[in-house]
Amino acid sequence: MKAAKINSFSTYTKCLRELHEWQYLEYIPSHNPMHGTRIIFYNFCTSDCKSKCTTTPTETVEPTVQLLYINKSNKNKESETAHAPTLEEVFIFFKGKEFPEQEAEKFYNYFQSNGWKVGGKTPMKDWQAAARNWMLNTGKFNTHDRTKQSSQQQPKAGKLHTGNDKDYSEPL
Image (cartoon, rainbow, N blue to C red; front, side):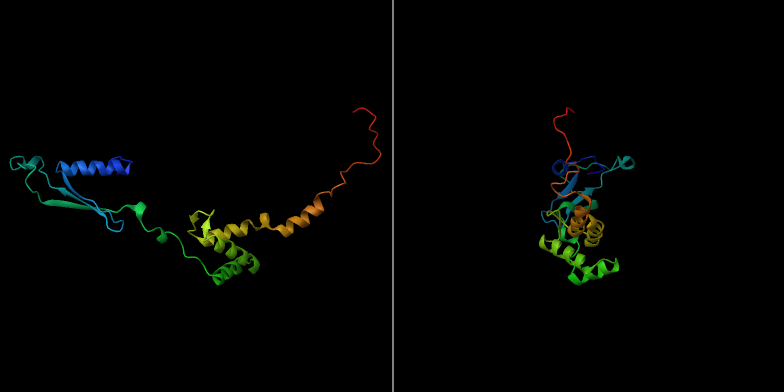
């Protein structure tokens, strides 16, 4: 497809079927994603054998090249995804990065609950990368630290940093 500059799979198969009908090649499609489609090219005469080249479409010609096309989009998707780790593997990984076991358990429980999918849709390929991102983002999502900081930095309701000695009869 790339060599022929064809981007559409349906156009590619249409061209192959037409070349098969015109007997330029033999196209043997496979509907099984594990067994590839076979394409057999025939040996047509070149310029040095013009006197011998009298091939008609009804004659059989010896095949010279066989190509095997396997549709990559129909491959087994499970082979691309990594295995789901055990809780012990997650503990060991977090311990190696000097993070507490509680964070490891939070990470494991979160992804175990959504089936080890990223964003709830795509199967996770590398759980260690997801764990490293989890570690980077723990400061953003740690609720205990936020409540302590918010009570120290933000004023409580009712105290708006205004004095009680304002005269509201004066124009601004």
